Length: 265
Ligand SMILES: Nc1ncnc2c1ncn2[C@@H]1O[C@H](COP(=O)(O)OP(=O)(O)OP(=O)(O)O)[C@@H](O)[C@H]1O
Ligand SMILES: [Mg+2]
Image (spheres, rainbow, N blue to C red):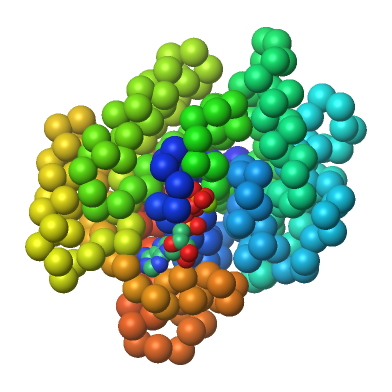
């Protein structure tokens, strides 16, 4: 069976898409899944932590696969990840930004380049996670067109303040034009401040807004904890960290993974 393909999106920056992709990938590897993560962001943040070896600036990556100017296929650019069972479609250097510009002026079929490229390798994985950039540009459209489901990562702040309505409009538009099977697997609230009144208030408002749109709100939210970013920066799974707090946080990602995977079967 080809892999489930999940895109993690929010056009707002710094909300936790990359962190969530990384820790969900770890949860999936621990479940024995063969996992591929796709760094669909010119910043290359996911590559920096998920690839086993440091990449040369000019090493081939996602940009070469998506560009009409380069010969590489998906298989050519995949590199090993930091854990057995994890592979990475890397992004380094500046070229993915150039490819985004190329896609803007490209003709028919430009939305489906990532989808086509992933179909070459999808049979070799159980789960493919696409870490999207903080924008609703052609790269993100490619991510949404390639995915079976999207996970919306957000802060526990007001729905409108997060631009979620705009993101949902984009998802609808992709569904209508390019990918009718696209579903929303759920909304993950990240960096939740459970000890503040405002954190709890926003959380409840967001929950209600998600419910009113028929979106699944994944509970519990992921709290704001230093160990989550420390583990990411050290390229370690929370289960590898060695503290009870980290292990408990890792279990939240495992629960969310189960919920997300249950969406498409
Ligand atoms: N739950 C959390 N608790 C504490 N720190 C977190 C948490 N989630 C993310 N962070 C930190 O917040 C910062 C932004 O996270 P991340 O890079 O994952 O966001 P992003 O949405 O991928 O950003 P961008 O839009 O730039 O790609 C990072 O330094 C990360 O370590
Ligand atoms: Mg990111």
